[in-house]
Image (tube, rainbow, N blue to C red; front, side):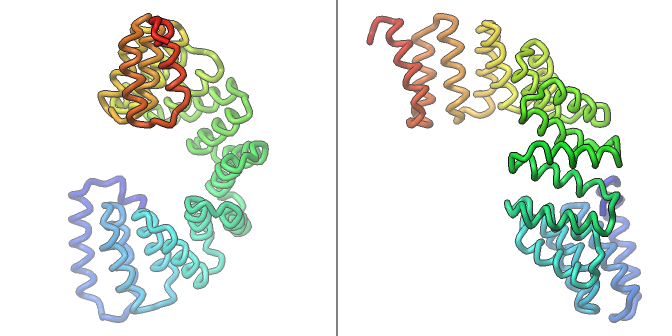
Amino acid sequence: YEAYVQISEEERDRKYKDLQKLIDAQPLISERRIELLLEQGGLLVAGNRCQEAIANCDLALRIRNDNHLAWYNRAVALDISDHHEEAVDNYRQAISCKEDFYVAWHNLGTSLSILGRYEEAINSYNIALRHKPDYYQSYGGKGLIYTFLGKHEEAIENCEKALALKPDYVQGWFSLAYALESIGKYGEAVASYDRALEYKPRDHQIWYSRAKALENWGNYTEAIASYDKTLEIRPDDYYAWNNRGLVLSRLELYEDAIASHERALGINPDDYFAWYSLGNALSGLGKLEEAITAYDRAIQISPQETQVWQNRLLALRRLGFA
């Protein structure tokens, strides 16, 4: 279905109708009818019409219950619909029909990973690689899981294997950067994010993650520039606005920090941490009464945050009230 994602909705609709005419002309039970139903299902998945795609797969399976592609396409539609448990069952059905179906093994691993079943996921990726040793996506999937599990050396090793097979694998560079960042290798992490950006320069998540790595590295000026790039691409990312404010406060640029926190709160006024961060920036500027008001808003949203109470008390003491 990936090819159909690239075409317009109008083109997909036209192709869908053409396929329907061909389907209607086929005998009710025929291999050609199955092929056409599955192709039509791919169009439906590409257009995010997943329930209709599942119905198409069901029609194909009524004709031949052991069609591995029908089970696989059904699983993909379920995955996209966030029905990952059912997707797992359907990938297993596809594999039972075609044991060396490496793409199904890979997708099974991804679904299991989403469900937090990491050991099973790694096993599925390994089986995919047994059937297709150069399937770089499975190395990338393993790398991501090992990062989640805190096994950063294994994560780096698998990401590097994926990138040796496909140097323009954006997710591989991103996962490698994340693993490197997790063990404090911020410079190498930034370099890996830069490689990812060579291939996907308008990806706001990569810019955001690059900014976080630079921030953790202590390179605040460049971190702000990366947050700016993130916000150029996605102006409604309140996490980026708030983090930008935090970095500006580290540079004691409190007025700019306040403006960033206010932008974050304009997007999500229910984020206690943004109110807390605003309070800290106002306190840094000496606007203690306004800082206390911001801390109060944070406490209303999340009253159990002890650090907010402590900073509020410090502001009161500076005003001579406690």
